[in-house]
Length: 379
Image (cartoon, rainbow, N blue to C red; front, side):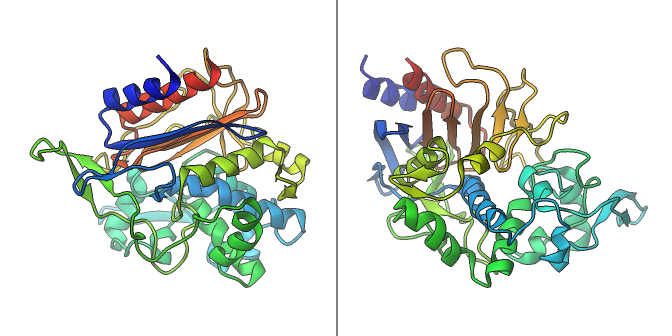
């Protein structure tokens, strides 16, 4: 079976409406194919350049933007981030719960830093991941999606003490805005998207025309799916944690830049030593990458490598051991909540991205299709 047939068979077996898979090395594209539907209700087909919500795959791009400013001395990895973002200057930690449902709070033992934010060790959380964050917002009142109030919360633990997936990269985006006196879209367009030639990547107030729809499975629907109107963009600020709309080819070029040690097509975004620092486990001896859930209808529990003591760099999950038939030890990876996934293997010089638009996160079929894409890359 040829690689295109392999990939299409994997999508069929996965029972996802549509998907795009791209494999790259430092020199270009090794494999690229799209199949299925961008909108199964209308019958619109998925194309390789179909616009999709990349959700938390936004985080890696924003992390690169922040590290550019670290190189320039405009942001510091280890200074209190409250100097830049006053909202984070005096963090409080949840120490328990009162009988009336209100949280018991105490001052944090130390300030939050940019390093804490980039490594998800700040103590911040997500209301859809950690039950205590959901419980806090149920007491305080659920804020509107896309509001600064939705990312303003007490901490789960003292900064640096544990790992918890969180809204931290939203605050990284706001830190970029604070020191550049610009908005995140303008900064990234000039310093990340533009130099890489990512013409279809950006923040939007609404889902652009022609973009893929998010699907959920439905036994009642004739096609087996219904489309979902969820959109992660818009709101009071550009979400550095999950607001970008992009395409698989655009994201593949971003992966190539990381594989290239911070440069692509003669355009250098970061120094090679900065990419090396981003690719180093920053959280040991903590284990990173395992997600619980407080909203299983939105995201199921997720752990990419349950048998490994996975780490976290400045923006990426890191697997410490080689995957049989797949990525090398020390590879970088993460995902987007609508079941898009990527990996970057600096040792082998290979990366790949799989984009689909189906909810909830952690869909076994989408993960199996992504695994097939990886196996194609190393076959």
